Length: 481
Image 1: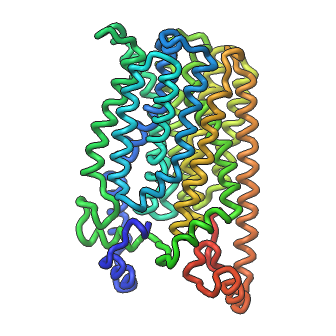
Image 2: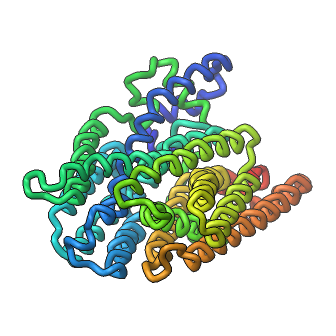
Image 3: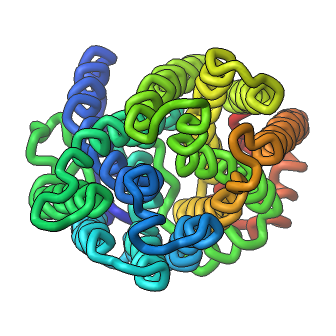
């Protein structure tokens, strides 16, 4: 993003862009280098984030509720309270990316949430867990918007969904290997007088602090600060990204972000998807246990389910980028998830229920990277896009709060009500995506029919005669479908 790369030298580079050329082979080699250098690192950050966020579900199977004397309803509140802090601090944290170095800010908040995860291992009551989980949500609020911001700095519009899916697959990997890791860690139960669930928090929080230190020194904020690129590669990396013109007034971008009605559609759509995603992530170990597995074996049984979600997410997003299309891929993913939850609510044999849970993961994991990429594609002004991302993610994560209340213990072992609620949410989300595609198509068609006089009138009316500040409102801007 241009705000993250604003030095006089870079502005001169942008002015002289037409004088700088490169070959397709050079660009392809650069993209491979960026993928190999940055994607594994971004994925690791998100794995740690999601693991520290959802490991309370694995801790539950290791007698967390019994040792802290919590009821099932209180456990649900320890899940939901995380998203109160997360939602309230997501926008302020996103704005911090414009004040301090993104890498430094991410390193700082990672250190805080890693330490808080360790502290969870020493909580002895419902209320102490509640307070620390609230603080954990505040600390983690800045990571995902930061990753979205950085991704748009390095990769083109048509490359975003795949790259987002690759690092977002960290959520599925955290679910898959988090269960295996929790299974192994619980073997330490009794060591140094600590229970297995305490060791889960301690040993999964400590690595986050160590990785946070490496982010401070290792991760580059932009191509110009990338130590692994040659001077020519830095120029190619900078110039190949389509960047909005410099903004005269950043407040205009913020106002535009709050007043564009489409962002509120994105927010509601994202809310439905995130509600289902988090209810699935937090309660899948419990749901699988109630298939008939022991608590220990349930930790292992969830791993293949999450691996299915990882692979399907990458495949769907690769297809989306290749075809430069978002809505149909979202609709298909939502239909798959809906079908999975409907099936899970209807069948009782263990094999069928395990298949249904796998179908749920087959669809749900591609939704977030597709939604984030679609928004990134269709909001051109830099500050407006940054504001829109924060609004969508912060409001959407209210779904994490509601998702913590979907699967109630009184509905065990089949959780029919929770399954039907999630199926309804995904059906509504899919219909909204289809409607948005139609709306974008109609707007693109309208703009393509404008004559020169109408274009000038629209620029005067919507941009006060300043075409450079219009962003996605410009008549020449074409929306991604």
